[in-house]
Image (cartoon, rainbow, N blue to C red; front, side, top):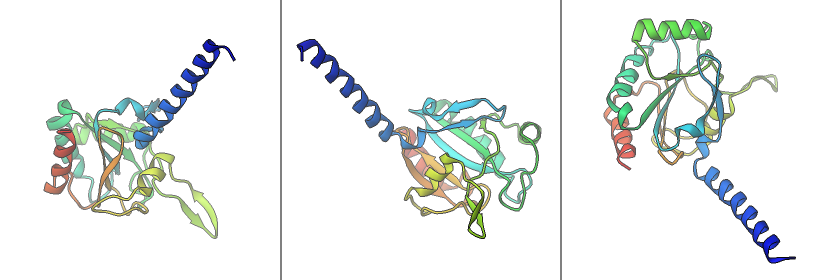
Length: 195
């Protein structure tokens, strides 16, 4: 093999290994989802930001957390925080509306300006051994990661929260009743933003 072919082959292999290594270093960002308008979004565009990922619902006892989520977006958005709302109708059918209904509710009721996405399933649901609802791949990944203070496993209810660091790794998971602006959440967000 000539030197230039060997050099070319080495470069191709190095590029492939490098891209696989880079993808592995930002595992939570290796997914595509749809925004509230139905447009595909590659989550890799969020690399370098701290993400607060929340499954949301409009008719839940915890829906008031939208106010706190928007306040976090306003306070930390220009410092690198991206709040991400993922509507889900799997818990008590508390998000029955269309994406247009959800967007209108969020805008009119809570003046939401943070990124909202299309409705999805956060858990896989089986009945009599058959899958009747399949979790979105992004949420399959999120719920598989060992985190603190919540452990891996299914989402328990609306408004469960994940913090993803600038490097694309899941660094924390908080229960639905933990307020978005609770001291333990703020501590993690500020520590990740400071990195």
